[in-house]
Amino acid sequence: MAAAVEPLLQKCATLSHIKQLQAHLITTGVFQFHPSPRSKFLEFCATSSAAGSLLYAADIFRHIASPVTNDWNAVIRGLAQSHQPTDAVTFYRQGLRMLTCKPDALTCSFTLKACARALACNEANQIHSQVVRFGFIADILLQTTLVDVYAKSGYLDNARKLFDEMSKKDVTCWNAMIAGLAQGNQPNEALQLFTRMRDLGFKPNEITVLGALSACAQLGVVREGENIYSYIKNQNLDTNEQVCNVVIDMFGKCGYVTKAYQVFNSMKCTRTLVTWNTMIMVLATNGESLEALKLFDQMSKERFQPDNVSYLAALCACNHAGMVENGVELFEKMIKDVSVVPNIKHYGTMVDLLGRSGRLHEAYNVIDSIPIKPDVILWQTLLGACKTYGNVEMAEKASRKLVEMGSSSDGDFVLLSNIYAAQRRWKDVGIVRDTMRNKEVKKVPGFSYIDVDGVIHKFVNGDRSHLNLEEIYRKIEEIMGRIMEYGYVADTGYVLHDIGLEEKENALSYHSEKLAVAFGLIKMSNESNPIRINKNLRICGDCHEVMKLVSKVYNREIIVRDRTRFHNFKNGLCSCEDYW
DNA sequence: TTAGGGTTAG
Image (cartoon, rainbow, N blue to C red):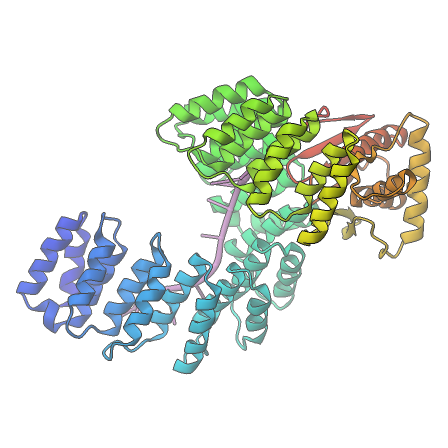
């Protein structure tokens, strides 16, 4: 009977077709007496893209007198893929109470997948214990799913523990763990695991390299990225367009636009929309705004309809170059384009674009008029612009919003305090500081990475833990002395604490990127090699000035990748033209 | 027989 259902299912494109087939199955008795084809039918119905079919499948399930495990699994699977994956968990729990539905490994697999999509760690935990209780825990596929769920819902330690305890590992579970670490902001650990996997004789496949390259991109380690790219070419993994996309992204995030472009231009496989978007974004973040916009126009000519991300990338290009009019025009074009719906990131970029060019009221109006609920980033962006233009009134407005929204990130308070400090409103500075203390505001530590001979060194603001500490601090003194001869004056507005001027200057001197550049100057003797630094936050104005002067005084190219873009310092100037 | 790992984004 099962064989007879398959060809009929292929013809069901709409819910009404599905209903007709169901009627047929009922009249022929299949529905009542042959659970196997019935489950097949239910699975088709639950996972079909026809409108309303999933709800219909759940409804059919409720009317089956004694549903079997596969009927249940079919609906859970559909719900797990839906927009409301938590419904799958509810459905799973309801089914547990039915005698005819004994859970099997598949039941747990689909439900766990739903937890992963819903980032529902508590539920995953519960199902994990049930997996143990039901006796399925030896199943390597289920173990992999568990690793994946824990990693995705932010419990990397749980994931790692499970992974380490797996007695039998295959490539897929390595992939789950590596990708989990890479996506969970632990790129160093991801790369370590990638190395270990190869040492143990496992052969990375196209999915493994996606995780590994993403880790390289985050760390900005082009050397490792190049190695992986060689492996990819060797193994012919570059016939996979996702792999190519990530290679492009990796080169871009490491600051190698030309290499990214080479990969883009010589792809063995077909370019997809994501390929175009990635390349446009690479150009935008590397300061090649005109080229980015050129590519944005070109993609339509090659029959690629720009989507949300394409517009965002093009808006970023305008933003980084301060091309306000182009940005506004593009934004209006997007609003008129019925095939895309602007999201909060587009509005965020517009607020940044308008705010940074001093059009604070227009920026405010964007936030005020958006059809979706503004988030903290929007107000933080506006607050940043208020700092640049010293608009106290609007800064207070934005700060109030941030407090209302329960923001407790130090940057918000620091900005407001800096704005007061610039106006010499010390009393208000004090109030902000007290609030910070009372609210136990979290400090997001600034850190920078620098790659010296293939070894990644990490510096945290005010770091005193590095082995070469004394040497580094001596070098910083030397740098400060030399650039002062060129007119450098510390911009202490970037230090919040209520300390004396000299101490403020010191606090500034030990920003992580300054430590990194000092270390680079000590250790990297080949002057033709640029010093490359990656930073987790945006570079501060003072560090930006120092980098410019260092590039001139020491005749050394310095490339800093900050949170949003690249700064290429050469001969006293920066590629961002001081607009960032 | 059905199951596990995957790309771009303020």
